[in-house]
Amino acid sequence: MDRNLQLLGIAKKAGLLAIGGESTSAAARSGSAKAIATTADASDGAKRRAQNDSDFCGAVYVATEYRKFEFGRVVGRGAPATLAVLDAGLAEGFVRGLAESDPLRYGAAAKAIAEKAVAEKAAAGKAVTGKARATPGEKTSFGAGKSLAERKKTNGKRRTAK
Image (tube, rainbow, N blue to C red; front, side, top):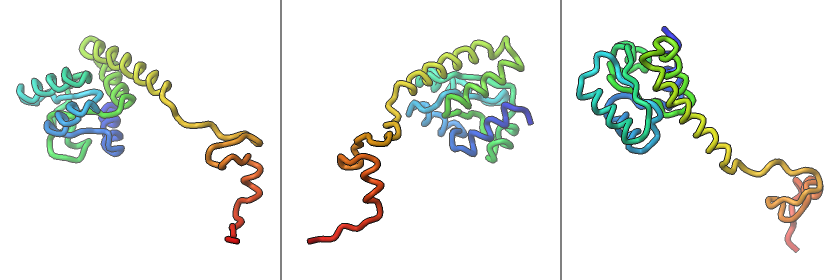
């Protein structure tokens, strides 16, 4: 099994893979699809639907050389014609692996998804991730105005009503 199919298996185990036409379309409508892939033996209608879904949500569309049975063997389901990767990092790795095997066919898709991954990482870096750990003596909101040292002194002691 090659590396690209292994990445799809990892995405499946992590719950970051939409399998089949309906699930892929639902992921595209919700905006969570990062890359949509179809098999070589998918019907023209399935390929057209996947292309439209990727255009709708801004995901990268890739028509792979894999067959339905290869996708099915990896994801543990029948023979899906379309898959959607829901994680930017896994999608980038999948498309980059395809580009390494066939740069002419998948090079543009790999470049597009790499740019999207960089933009998503930059947006995630600007997001508030929480407050850093308090230094000794610093007042914190969860200590009700007490310093870290004061909280350690009273930790574990019960208050009794007077």
